[in-house]
Length: 120
Image (cartoon, rainbow, N blue to C red; front, side, top):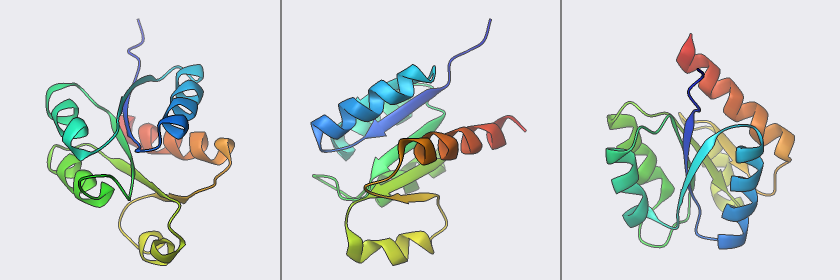
């Protein structure tokens, strides 16, 4: 039996989080959501998460700090942001990044690629 890969989606905009969760579940992923760092950290630490997707601008902390924490746990991350002033820095950074708004096909292909590398 195939184990569904678990994605933690940390997004402060509830409507965006719901839409992305629906898309990811359609592709067969198991998805947990959190509105910020304070909700996301316990899920990363206690639940078998395969990938973190985090908005860079969260309520209490940055998605970058959460991605750093995920990395210490051996969990890869994908950062997303609608903040145009951060795009250049994020695109040059060490982690995969998508600028909002993005095409859902690009989003799901990037996730699939990250998770496929984990299996290899």
